[in-house]
Amino acid sequence: MAFIEELLAKESYTKSELVELLQVTGDGRAKLFSKAAGIKEKYLGNKVYLRGLVEMSNVCRKNCLYCGIRSGNQKVNRYNLTDDEIVDAAIFAWKNKYGSIALQAGEISTREFATRVEGLLGKINAATYGELGITLSLGEQDEDTYRRWFQKGGIRYLLRIESSNQELYKKLHPNDSLHDYKTRIECLKSLRRVGYQVGSGVMIGLPFQTLEHLADDLLWMQEMDLDMVGMGPYVEHPDTPLFEYREQLLPIAERFDLSLKMTALIRVMMKNINIVAPTALQAIDPLGREKAIKVGANVVMPNITPGAFRNDYKLYENKPCVDDAADDCKNCLDARIQLAGHEVGYGEHGDSPHFYQRKNAQ
Ligand code: SAH
Ligand code: SF4
Image (cartoon, rainbow, N blue to C red; front, side, top):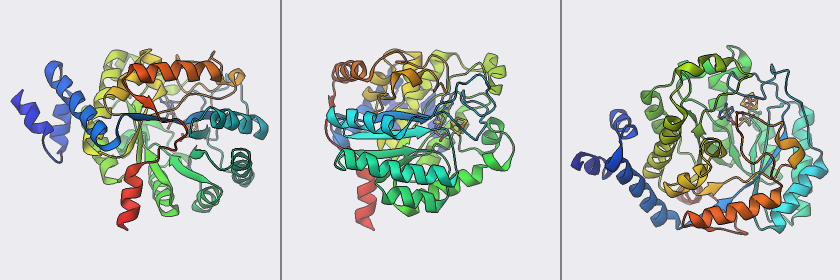
């Protein structure tokens, strides 16, 4: 046990130390979690910030092998919210003092889409007096598009690398130019150049994924000097090619446990970044997000997509809250966050302190 304490006291970690830490159980696991909780308390206090999630559209040009709304899945009922529906959801978030929203969708990279989002950002900011912090999660775009959206008030961007290992990345995506690891890295660099708070992350418990891969993912996130991390368990979807490998997956409880350890470890390694408690955790354990908050996460993304469409935005199985109205989500979430011993930062952006630290140092 002294060994774990010594490890946890270190300033930085090697890959093999991280592999070691990903395997801790019992008392060692409790020590890792309490170290991460202490770091969060010290650097960020006990506030949890909200990003009202609007799933704008499930239309996607890509065909990622893990994702339920991939273009090849003919069973999906495709939808595209209208600007009015999205602005209404933003007004709901604003009135309820969420502080921020996140716009997410399948990947569309046409000129029309770029222009549409530009106009939409203007409409949202006009309707909410520019008070909401807006996160975008709209996939790979060219730098000019990222810049146009930034100029219209998008301030944060989430683009997961999914796996930082190129070989594994190739196994999770069709082998073509639309699904190129290098392009994804270039997009993350573009986002940083344009000036966004940049978030990325990985899926945990993927087929073919090892603890060594996950340790490398943690080191990659640190090296990329991310401002935000969003990572969560891989949850298989029956209408995807990767479903074929479901027998090889870690049991779901182990994927959940690994996700908590990854969250705790990235908090220990990157003390003042924002970390999302992913909704996919809740697909496994009803208290999943609260558990992530207790071990280092400080951002939650309650779903405010109009109810009728939530069922059609299924990236994975057992997506939670598809039947709730946004109002129910708000009440339920507030109670849950308080139960986790935290307070909701109502009406605050809750931007990444790490981003401002880097900016001020420049
Ligand atoms: N199209 C955009 C945003 C929507 S997908 C993009 O791909 O960036 C958002 C995230 O959902 C992806 O980054 C991926 O990490 C996650 N996701 C997709 N399928 C999943 C699955 N089966 N299990 C868990 N997470 C999944
Ligand atoms: Fe499309 Fe994103 Fe799903 Fe890939 S993960 S198929 S880009 S929605």
